[in-house]
Picture 1: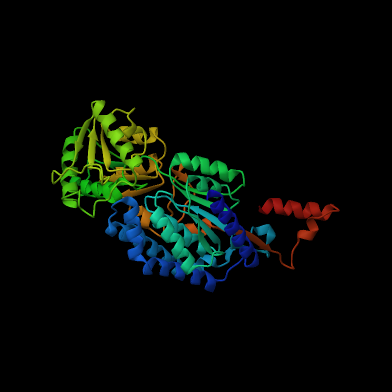
Picture 2: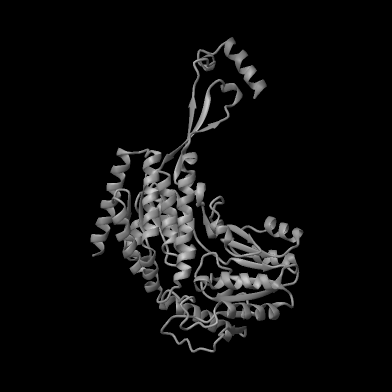
Length: 473
């Protein structure tokens, strides 16, 4: 069966390559038509998409799917439709003085066949948002969704087949071995969203083909509460940001840095905020389950290790329910006094567990962030402009939201991407269009060029002209 799927992968890749060679520069009308079909795929199948993702999670909030996936993707497609003409336009570039009256131009050119590997946590958004950018840029696209969301992956493959020809957009389903075969294909660009560990392997596989990559990875994204912050507003925001999708978000606050002596007060306010968001948990369709037994047990093991090591572990259970294990719903959990060697403090958590760490000074908070790998996101809450500026300038992160969580992700006029271990490259909006394009520099020589005077045989004319060039450049 795997061989059959891999044969299909090779067949679809060759089909798309041949189609691109016949039509290497789709015009504006065709690109808009493809984007409009992608928009139709998004808008006409909302209920099916929500149901499939709910099945894969064993309980995924339909409201969160609609808000964090379908709404975000719709906005991105509409933004691309509104701006595509300008993005495609050949751009004038100033010509260096010695080469006037020649002219410079930049022509954004499609790359060819693009591969997209999407994860399980936001399976629709993190597949279709990069597809939007790749189609806008004029490419053909192959998508490999996660094997952890089989119901959704099968649905996406069917919907892609209903709205697109296979030489335009095709979805390849399969297990991790299919994923390895997929990233080994000689794509013209490969975008991968997932863990840092797997991202390293993807980069190695792509390097064999000299395939350029965009890696959207993860990491331990800190949220810093400044002494000047509005504590109620900050804890409300952190509680929502942490528990959206039950913490299974690559830019969720991974741990919280609070001024010394405030951990207890912050934990109490977080518990109150959680209870407002989710008065019940077990049968509450708004509270999402953990994606798989393996991830559920991983999170429980992290909590058990922290408790055994003497950390203070508080589970938030507003209605005092017995969640059991059948539903894979995990109680929101706060951890204080966690040692730096615990898994909670070393690994990306990716669940509804929030360590709270106290800091004595802003220098300490900045040092804490900078000792770890560069995170995908950073959050700062406060009113002190000097402290805000220091955090922005003295830490490095993929993106930052001030006085809220995660909103930098949904700005179509801003790039989204990581740095260091949290990824490379960026997309969204025009940055996505540029990521999947070759910016081709073009020089148009004028008939009134002095360039011939700089060619052999060299003599006095060359020396005079060369001397003039040296003086004016």
